[in-house]
Amino acid sequence: MDITLFNTLGREKQIFKPITQGKAGVYTCGPTVYDYQHIGNFRTFMFEDFLKRVLMYNGYEVKHIMNITDVGHLVSDGDEGEDKMEKGSQRTGKTVWEIAEYYTKVFMDDAKLLNILPPEKYTKATEYIKEQVDMIKCLEDKGFIYVTSDGVYFDTSKLNDYGKLARLDIEGLEEGTRIQFSTEKKNKTDFALWKFSPKDTKRQMEWDSPWGKGFPGWHLECSAMSKAELGVTFDIHCGGIDHVPVHHTNEIAQSEACNGLESAHYWMHGAFLEEESGKMSKSKGEFLRVKTLVDKGYSPLDYRYMCLITHYRKRLLFSWDVLDSAKTARTRLKSRVKSLKDNATNFTNDTNSVNKYKEKFLASINDDLNMSEALAVVWDTLKDESISPAAKLEMISEFDKVLGLDLGKAETEIKQDVPAEIMELVNERIEAKKARDFKLADELRDKVKSLGYEIVDIKGGVEVKAVKN
Image: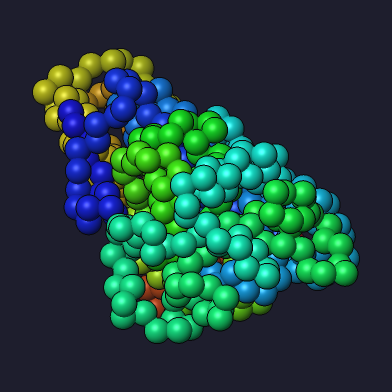
């Protein structure tokens, strides 16, 4: 069965046709490790995980490369301001190397909690300086660069199809709406390939180059590293929707100008996780981390379930009520799977029914990662009495290779000192409150208290504490 993917480059679903039969080269934009990643960042990383799992489910051998941006990402897309890593160093009092190592580890730990499969290789920008300098030399030889007082820039006017990914109306751009316009830039859309270190100031991360001491521009690293690890042209490039107008547009420009060939055949982008106030962003100062969810009593996989119920190209509005619903549904799903394991004695089934659900599941995930529909197939499978518990268990285990909910495993993500039977009552109370059955909610709270535990309502959830005598 064909896999169809929405290609941002063509603004349509297209049948996936790999460069090499049975193999898929995938490059995904990873974290800038100057701070913690928030759960909005992880929505993008999870969509990419769903993609990888779908490809593997279809029998593809996936080579997945994810970059770690540990230098060069400036605080604005206009090549202005401080490097985010240097700014993070000033904020924490640690060296840029220390904060890069620390936040990289936290990112990887959080990804593991969310059951995100690791890439075949993480590539750090600081480990590919030579490849980045070589790409600038390539662009210089082909006449695509010029030098200003603060760096080496790509001349976008030299490329006929610049902005094709974002479909930019370059003539209609106004100063400040797309990038900060510099009097030394020849065109509004020109971007830095290499930034010079400030005079009389030694940066913590800087390197020699033919044009002067400094550091690479943010966009350059992905072009250089994807080429080094996946080749000049590879199958799929992914990122957040915010990468379309600037980062990925500039990646395509510099890669194709240097190599003379298409960079990636398919460009895929995930929509934002939003709060009521708008897009979740680190620039606001406060944001939700995976640890925040754990501290409030949620499993990280509750959030994974929440991401499954909305298509990756649609905005997802975060609220604690939605997360509570996801938690309840996932708990029910795991309970059903446990019941199957307890009753999986005889493997008898209606072959036609089994094949029907398998085909529906495959059709759903292969239709541009329609995970919510695939999840519905899982629930329908569980309800079908013509299929034996053992056969259902086998099917659900196969389906979970894509969903990644660890349905057959015991909970290990959150260490709870509260007994399971108490937590069941707590969850029942949460559901009663959502149904506005406050009488039942009060009764459940009192029952929990009579068993030696206290429910404390807090913003965004509840805490359960043992009652002190």
